[in-house]
Length: 361
Ligand SMILES: Cc1ncc(COP(=O)(O)O)c(C=O)c1O
Image (cartoon, rainbow, N blue to C red; front, side, top):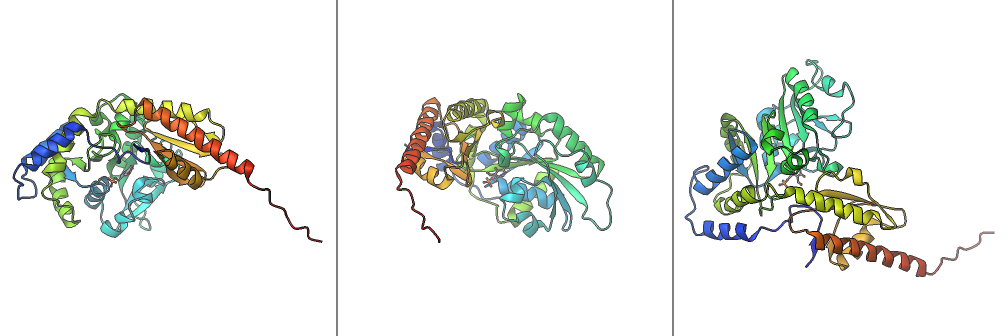
């Protein structure tokens, strides 16, 4: 069996989820946009879990994010977001294409903006500038390796946004990881935000889907925008049935993934040729730096040959993401695969014939 550490959306559904989907598949599909009883049960459970009045089941977290942008902003308005946020790096410019928004990027580390930067982003409108309509936070922050934003930090940021008359949205694709790391509930993490998007298919292991959470009125409008964006999926009761099990059974175990991530990081740290910063491993993501001798594509291939799938982030950096199918055994096998792959690479380099350079006279 391959050990797939490229991301957490490769997580497989549990037996209980598979059984729930099989039962749902025998139910008659419903007709309307929001009248399926299983989807309604999921949306109510998600609302309770996230501490909001209502939620809307979406096929992806990117869809939930984009619906939120469309409702919070008008064309020409700005989203204030850290420069490495997923909506900037990985959603194909959808915020601009679908909602006509621009980004006011915050240059700093996701959890520590430079003093004054946020205040000035929301300072009273200057007519030459786009109005900052929306504060965008991502918790955990994937681009920096699963960094957790503290509740105090989020509170301060939201305060600035409110003072500037802006709304606040949380891209909580991994909100359950953030909650576990903060020792809080997901509802507490998302409490001050007007809207929260949360993935069900990452740490929680549902086969697909995300929810957008907010007030009842906001979710009512979100239903129309979801339809406008082509996301009014029906029938959705089969993935919804699995997502209910995910919310009921997988939230409390997510801290295990963080423990496995720390074990993996500690195991890799001892291997010659790798650079792993244990302090950076806050949740379920491990970044592995490669010392100059090795190139990421070659190492990814050597690992694949040894049954481990890793993702290349840069020529000298890999990403490993933990999820519920990765236990101690898989962690040990991964460390062993790295050790063996690097040994192989080093031996091959040493054995390679030395190039002779022509002498230019
Ligand atoms: C922080 C963050 N937001 C949003 C998304 C989008 O999720 P989806 O693939 O469900 O659209 C991801 C995906 O990895 C993510 O990491």
